[in-house]
Amino acid sequence: MNQPTPTLLYIDDDDALARLVERGLTRRGYRVIHAASGEEGLEHIRGAGAQDGIKGSIDVIALDQYMPGLDGLETLEQIMAIRDAPPVVFVTASQDSSIAVTALKAGAADYLVKDVKGDFIPLLHVAAEGALRQAELQRAREEAEAEVHASRDRYAALAAERELLLREVNHRVGNSLQIIASLLHLQASSAAQEEVKAALTNAMGRVAAVAQVHRRLYTSQDLKSVVLNQYLDSLLEDLRRSAEGNRMSRLTLKAEPIEIDPDRAVAVGIIVNELVMNAVKYAYPDGAGPIHVELTSQGEDLLLTIADDGVGDNVKADPRSTGMGQRIVAAMATKLDASVERDPTHSGTRIVLRFQRLPAPPGKANNAAAS
Image (tube, rainbow, N blue to C red):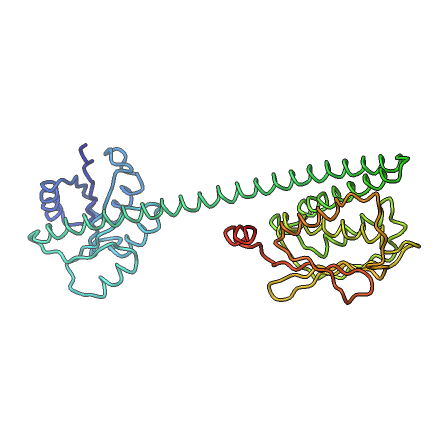
């Protein structure tokens, strides 16, 4: 594929030297246009020379310093103000290096000293080639930067859309789970048998624990974590309003503002629901009493305790109990990779769960499960 012929605009008031430049560069594959003044050169660059068929076709400029009217530095200043102006090679017969420095600072791509015989033309060709390569690299860099910015914008837009969709999903899931919890509550209220009422109430609490996480995610700025003290506060408020809420007037919470991922927050909520409901049923056979939920941090570990001041080990086994609550607590503790211990020094019942703030790596978790 043939490369297009590059066009050089030579701005110089010396017509004879301009003809030498045209002959020399034409042999080297250039098309040369001559402008006899800075003003004429600017007209060509701005497209005023459209009658010559050159509008928008100039690839590189060679600019002389000493000309009547606008001199080279003044012309260079105006060229640099033109959007997407071609690169400029500054050409002068002066040996004054300060002119070169001024031209380069003003935006010239290169600088060379000319002579009246045209011996500088090979150097002009090299300088023009270098200026064209430099301009091509600059365009490529700008295009790459523009693509990076565009990619970042697209990514930001996709991330914002994904976050909006996740919020909507959490909102819909939370609403659906809340409807299920409400239906369970209605069914429990109308149940005639106490064991059925208790089973439905327990199921309602488990569903509400999950629903609370989704409601938290929908209203939170961070979709990747749940603040446990706020979550547990709302969860316990749901328990107070449950069918057996009149026995929970002394339910208390002391929790630090700890953030964990939503999946582990669900496990924590279900454990709290099971152990609190268990304390409500069995800790105080003669009425209500205090039940304390506490969440603290110890380094990288979190400690969750549910305690009461009830009958403790003296509780009588309920023949209607299925052990479902204990199995659920054990399953959720496994999900948290948590240890579950009963405090033997506590007068009532005090269950202590210890687990890491961050989930264990998959390999470590699998090894622990295998052991």
